[in-house]
Length: 310
Image (cartoon, rainbow, N blue to C red; front, top):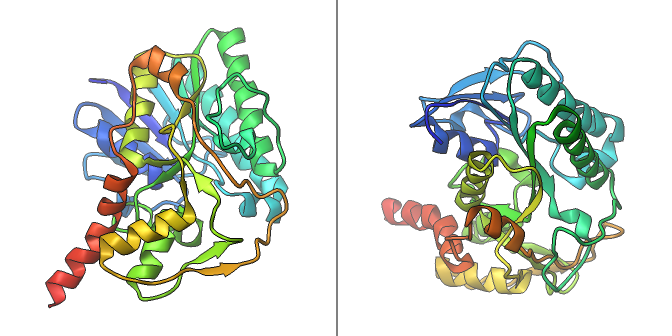
């Protein structure tokens, strides 16, 4: 993407800032964020930062492309306050898209979620049946239906990307998310600090872990190809939490065993894995960062910190 005026909502957050920074060298990029899960410290100087909620009516929307990544991005946030979750994730989506549309924007890429597939050890194709077991999942499915409306009724290019387990680590742009960061980031930080990471159950649950640079590239490709519909963004590989902890220990040169605790959630998703074939066929996208490489990058900052203090 080049010479476009771009808006990234949630643009100071973890995924949003990686996307905004990626696009800023060749485009005019605006990052809108309320700083709840994001911080302007994540952004490169070339990105214009606007502190605002997606529920506001005064952030800039005179853009060529809208990347809508703003959301309350966890189950817990929604269960604590379902009304707020709905306002931010559904009303905020409609507000941003509608305002951008009225200013001439025809291309929207937005974040959905793989959680709607439930627990599966086989790759999940985009055309399989999906369900909402949590308010978070319901809000993302509502986005998909509104995306369908904008594509059908207003003839816009509207692509929803169902992200799987996206990570980068606290040495990247996840630190501000704290307890809401990906488990890779949280477990690596705990182990690097000499603490035992807490794993639900017996640690055999699996996730399709996708490095954030691959996700940012997917967002850009979806806009470049002016896609409409929903697509999976994942790796078609899954690793257990036990395997992840072992890989972090190997990367850090540590030997810290996890602590196993009872899962506090009903309907906890035990396994996820993407089938990204539809997105690959549409754009040529495939993941470039293996989980082994990603773990090494997550742990690199801790290794460098140790080296610098010796």
